[in-house]
Length: 107
Length: 120
Image 1 (cartoon, each protein chain N blue to C red):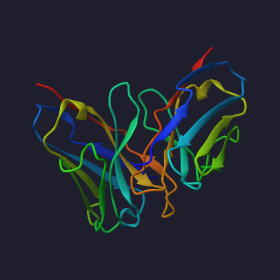
Image 2: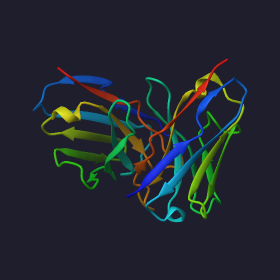
Image 3: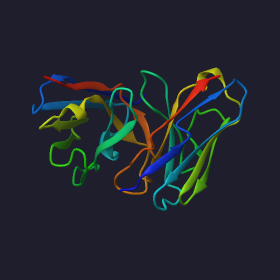
Image 4: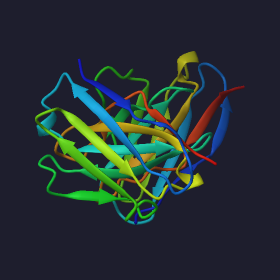
């Protein structure tokens, strides 16, 4: 199975900060990489698919990049509603594995 | 509006069984691969199982293979997950999720989740 590793596991940031989360796949996954946001007690929400395509309705401060094994999620200017946990997910194989998550907390 | 509503969770003893259901509305159910994803308390997301549009193909995580089965009823817009030989580490919120499209581009809709607790 393809393993997904996110870093960091958690980070503290202030409103307005630029935040970058990385995700590494254990083998090449082309651009089959998706990003989700999960707020406490809520279901995950798809933010970005195919590594860099913004899902409809998602603010443009979110962006994704990468291909092969290394990917990044960037929030250009952190807003209060962005404090949440973020997960990457590969959809290259038949078994869509997730990263362990990155919790973004208020500094 | 797409809606996915799960039910069937609850408290079950180790070794027991449970059937989870997910009723879909707001889209053509038979046109989409459907999946189950779980989240243990305080932990991350874990893909559990997926089923193809016609139910001809099913896939399972190694952690549940041989114990869980997945079904769909396209006439009734319902997805099911049957959990057998339950263990304490199966305790989690179970979400049903809809593929965004045919191009493996993630899950664009999720249910609210149903909690399964395995404990004596």
